[in-house]
Length: 81
Image (tube, rainbow, N blue to C red; front, top):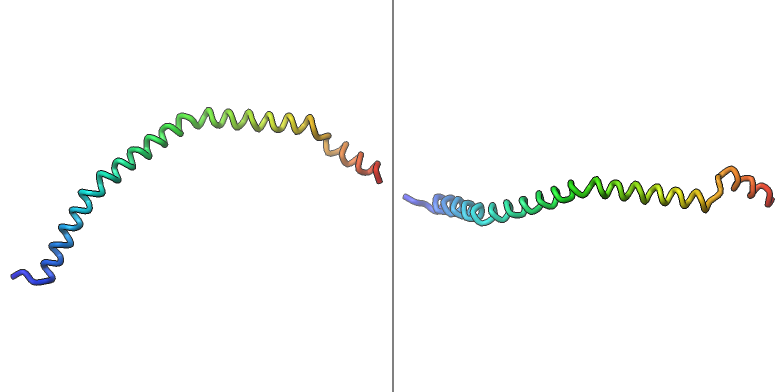
């Protein structure tokens, strides 16, 4: 005899299987897309690191040209007093 509880359990299992059939392919596709993006970023990362290092060196070199060394700045401030 099929009681309400057994019908509910059977419907729950059927719904669970339907959800898996519907969602697993979608999740798999999104995972594959994310892995593709990560692979591209992994390939680009060394070039980005190199560019960032160059910008850092350029920034430091221009700052060194514009600002006097700290010892001179302290000396000039002391002279103004």
